[in-house]
Image (cartoon, rainbow, N blue to C red; front, side):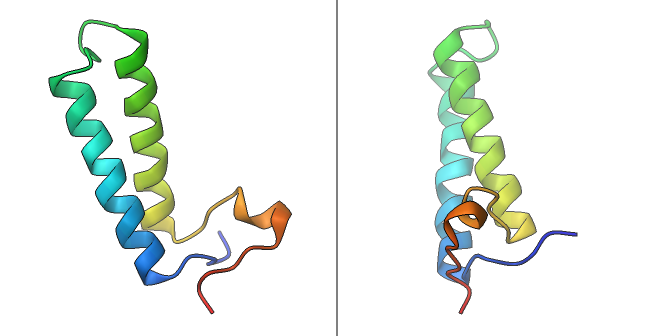
Length: 69
């Protein structure tokens, strides 16, 4: 479905940062109370986790970036 274009190190970094953003948005930034900063952080964290799991970054494609080599 998606072309793999992320290395293992890239995926690990995205997982750590994505999970961290989700935790911070839930505990400190007010995602549960509907604060815009918390919602934004949660969305960015979710996208980072999705790209880590799928091993494919859609923003890498137009620029021809491939870190999986």
